[in-house]
Length: 295
Image (cartoon, rainbow, N blue to C red; front, side, top):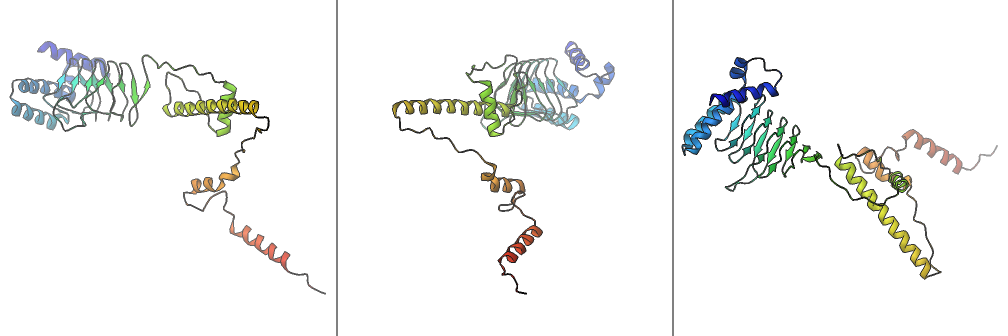
């Protein structure tokens, strides 16, 4: 028991540079207090003293602001930094050397009995305010960004951010198929549709940019296929004319762009003409329409 206590206190020194001495950690760290009370409550829960275990859990929440269900399984060297607002559900399983920050929720998405809460592998770090919801596994060494909402399994070593959670970094990057795409042709398509194809790397990919790049590559493949079809038609029929597609002009989309800029249909920045200019134009038209005066 005392060996586990010393192990927990040493884990605080390893992960919190603000910790100064043994007494300060033992008396002023609510994450450590919640962990010690949970171990007592978990022991009572396994002995089928469930009411007493829940009562101890409620007292721990009142004392520390951290709610850990006594049925949850917590590994060794578990550290909750700051701690206020942390909620860990009944069927959650937490591995060794896991770190949680304030406001983290290990919750469920179902009212059915059975496994409802997530399983965190060894060495997982969960940032402040993150929500991990559902009976799936977060792989060992994974990192969950602050305020992320994770509802799907996370592979080991991955980094997840955003709402809903997206994997932005993997230990083993995805292997993409090599596309036979001419870089100059891809750039031309980007310029045609006004997309700024900034660099996207496997180390820190932007999911939106990757999706846009995939759409541009698809457009490139469609253009190539259409060109082959036109070439075949020309060979089969001498009367076939290779018509050019109409060019995209900004004037054709002026009304749409104006409504998008102002948010009011029919009212736009580009199409709007100043009242004074309209009046002047109207006066000039009327003067031209009048017959010349005699004398």
